[in-house]
Image (cartoon, rainbow, N blue to C red):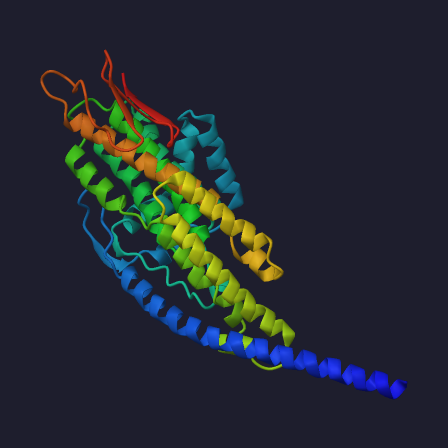
Length: 387
């Protein structure tokens, strides 16, 4: 009896080993094909990273990579960050703003110099993405808020009217910083960038709506907005996150094709997770390319559901909820269109005032009012009005 049990046990083990080897061989071939595709895509990403970045309002360019500067400036400092956030939340320009600005003088000056850099390469190692150093989000938001607030606070302390060109430069600088972050290779870079974009765009929109006509360099602002508005699409964001999936199999220095070799089950689970997650992110790319937002979100929702239903726990954590990022992206794009429409309305002002009718672009409504104009976007959740 014992002999039969032993023979049966050996047979089961042999069968499991055979199944493991068969699955591993099939996955290994798929991983080799995946690796070749991945290396080709990385070459394309490196070429894109070399694309020159626009400077703000014709500022003198500095031919260097801006990313090391951002990492040095946006270092976590909880106490100062909390003070700035408190001032911003109060919504009132006080002497405290100037005190904070003086304390952060070197950082603010460094930011204004950073946006003159003509290159933005985050140098993300997509095969070791878990080691990527991302600047502190709270610090970035706080300093960008302070950069905008300081100009009006400084003028108010002297009893002087706001000088609109320097104010516009600071607003656009924050937009540029946000746009630079969106070029990062992880969804964390993009999320930070989208938040900073909205800070700068909203401030610029309010400035355009309130500045005395003729006091803003509208043509230069429009040119910069168009250049900065050429953001990486949601499809590109999904694609870059997809490239980082390779880190699951290579984080410890292994070769990706080895994830399916040998007898270790844990490595096979990793290899199968990489292949499954990559396939799902490919579906997410296809869904993200859909111009119909409702259909796009359904497609992204289907991808998330498939990921959460996977037997492989690594797949469940590897595929993010792209619908949330899509909503953030929609709002940022709509805010870009709204502010650009405000600039164009001001440019169209003639002797008879503002035009009765105007095509402000997608998702934006225009109305001429007794005092000026009103532009609204439900998608951006923002209304700009010349009063």
